[in-house]
Image (cartoon, rainbow, N blue to C red; front, side, top):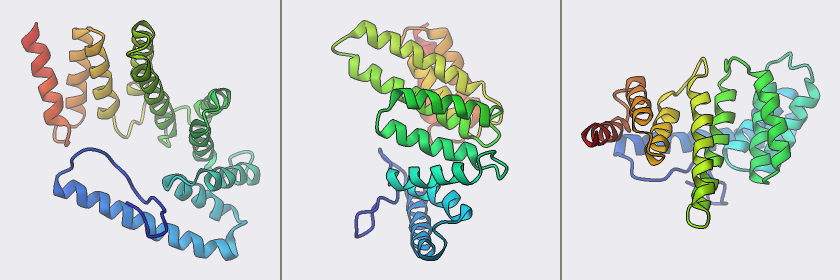
Length: 226
């Protein structure tokens, strides 16, 4: 979903029922309003802490990483001791920017910073960082599947460990997603019992979600194969 001048307001893949599709439209509309307001405030408040704290999130949301990273750096510079509490969010934006540019060492450094800034996952930033790391590992596993099956299998095992850590975090805002991913990976690796356990936990986390029927199918398939 884009503006007439090409700003990406929202994106998703796969089919969605009308109610869920309308939710995506609502998100896009809200992001567009945020973006327009930000553009106006940039003319007079572009150098303030409050502006940069908001700007880094809006620019990250629409994929303008150069602006998002610049604002995040200002937030860190203007509040080096994190007294205002936006430090973890700022580092998350920097981490996302590093992922976009594939700076592996920088990614490791920033992830370590987030572990300290949001150690108890109270802001939900730690789970985002660790889940993003797992998704990156899964992408690498997928890319290596044909050329190097053994390496792909090792990467899948690493992703399973990463998702296990995510699922065990306190203050999770969404436990179902990492558990569902974990269940699928365990199934691919042939670990039926672990896969079944992950899927059952995923279903219990939100039995009425849009993906709950799909999770039930996985559970049925595994139980019938035993």
